[in-house]
Image 1 (tube, one colour):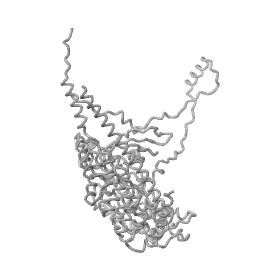
Image 2: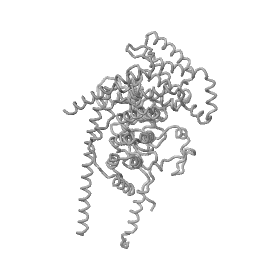
Image 3: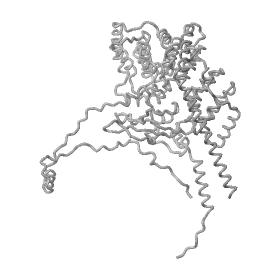
Image 4: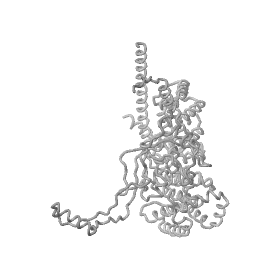
Length: 222
Length: 415
């Protein structure tokens, strides 16, 4: 069926652009989004309450930018840790700051974004990342600043005696199958087939995810 | 060629004025060569009208555009009276709460402190320093030394102490001159007053610890001991969180343990370091107060805020495997053995800490001052280069904007 020619709806297009511009201009800043009422532990912006396990931490600990606002150049090059990492892991896990962008609308400059290089548990269990990336969970009340005179002691870690599991012989049926396959493919090696017992190193559950990959709610309703 | 000769003249000037330093009460610790502002006055600065800069900044803020660090540095450079210092303070506050707050330059901060000292506004400088979160004032060690010396000269040790606490918060005890001056101020204040609130004790402990870690002599070792003793006292009376929250201190428990480790290290090391009797007495006193009225302390704690502090202490105590309270008898024993060992090895210094520090200041300060002055001259040149680069970039940007504007106007008139 032939449709009638669609008129270009210029006013609607203009309205869409104006709405997008206004949304960009009046977007809630970090200081509004992450403000917290410490009496009732609710966020005034969304009206939601913090989860129950975070109540004790919200009263005791500080956000990352709260610590950095008191430092020259917002603490560039300093090491910061999270209290949850300190309680969870023995090895040192920390971010070394490379870039900080505080939210200037905050009264005490205690919100914002930060970028840094992550070291999560010393090798072999963990790694130091090569690139700086945005720090996740900056607004969580969980952060601690490592004092300068303690940095060396904090980052140093001597791995304990790790018993490397020796490779182990296969169960008899599997061993017979492997040997039969070898004979079929003409492989005449006489060595015993051994099973490697080392664990596949997966990242722990609290390894920081890519903050850039998380998006914010975009667009307007109409 | 000129620079080494200038430096030699400065060293001579320093040595000549030195004997007069500590006699009269109106003299600071730093030599006149360090404190005078000839070099700073002699720098090239742009002369701008303050009212123009102020109106420019107001317009930029109204239009919600970022103000450049060059504008605020020009404003602070051209302050010429006490009222204008108040205006400059307002604009510093506004700059800190603008998108460019990270870019506040070192030379602006240095100039701001110098101007405050020049026009007799030390209390204003101290106020902006204490509220560094709101004003963004993070001076370097040279500027800190100047500010502290101006307070020492006026014998205003209370304000000098506040400056030392700010240096401690910023962990800026890098230069030996800063360390020596702060230790002098700290011991002076500790001699005068002995009863402090626990926050003051904690601040004293941290400010004694941080420079003490850097100084490798008996003053340094005794300061470490003194600092650890005070921090251990706060830890056992008010909990570990009271010690490390908002302070540049580590959250691992056992500050008294670290104090005893300092003593044992001195006793067993073959080097010359001695520990002051004063510091040992302080640690002894702390251990006695903590051990004997253990019932009195627990009563006081239950009378104070029960819910909050109780639950917090509970959470903290759950982390620590063995509470520190139970280790106190062991600490007392270790202290007694180490003390007898130190006395047997004759490693106990009987002079007071203040006399020792004054002696150290007299010996070491001129050398440190010479280094600092050389570094300051280099920094002045670096700042001058940065300033010229910034001015160049601003000029280029303005020209580019003008050209674009003209191109756009030509395109509009053509179309």
